[in-house]
Image (tube, rainbow, N blue to C red; front, side, top):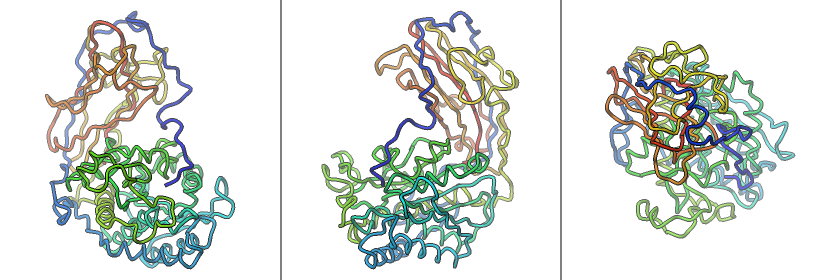
Length: 501
């Protein structure tokens, strides 16, 4: 994991946007809307979340036939990376022969397994003399729906980089080889990447994403990153843990009783960040770097509180003895589970095409087929849309009231997962952390999500709710904005979509 890359603002927040705070009542009170119920009826035919399983018996969670990745084979790749570093000055730095030999090793394994493998020279933005990115794609699956899995292959110059990031690179390689050996029928395309020059500022992955056309970027539905997944005093961390992209990763670790947490330490510091900057959903596993384990984390995960997750982070002692085999095993199997959930055909013989399932989800084509408080839809002054020019502005009146909208959607029975995704911008005149004004998402009488003025920010955030529990049912999904008697909170809703995965 790089120390050099520092986050600026998340991809969904444009620093140029205004963040006005209207007085109580605001400008919207001049165009009071009729109060109506907002509902979205959905017909589902999708699978449920996996059942619980123990770490020693992951088959219970791999109902979609995801394989158990052999951690000993993962460690065999680590042995090779270690030997390569030993022959090349003790490291696999991006500009050295140790990195190039690592590329050759991974490439040879992938080509022998039947992958289409490409070395991509980094021609701009990388350290002078840095080796290439390595991209591998498995044939089959819908090329317009790509799920991408990546890890950086370089180390710092101070050591061989077995945890950082031989661990992610080795787990990714064995997952790719396992996919080739199993050769399942794919519904979506799978692409793997090993990045150069991450330790100098995420340069290889940044070059790759910049080099793609907007069309090619749009084909990548999620990018999954694996950086330091074997920290000896580590924890179980997931990037964007509440996102739709993270759902299968969290489901697997939840099934092992690991109680994973958000990867706050790694935010903006690894190869998922360039993808985020271009609006591509991301997630990934990590076990931590130089930050220190809390007493609460030690209580639930074991290890030593007050000590670094990886005591050999960016040091010469990041050798084969600096590997947490249990964590490496759990991450490797979680990668396989995620890959199978996202890309492998369920074998039901039916398809899951959600294209256009939500009509006019971006509100650009008038108000149809939305019903309810349709006056909330428009190109409103004083607030931005997430995409295009129009959005739905719920609340923002600064007086007691409830507002809402509705649409009927059908999900084909061939779906294995269905997620309702939406972009929400919460702007408020309230202060403090008390929830005065609320935005809820319900399926029937069940609340799926609750947000409030306490969640306000400076721009749109993509949010998601799972509808897997309603497989085969017709359910009314309800978005509701409720304000108390004073101080406005605006809930700006845009780009509502129903997606598989």
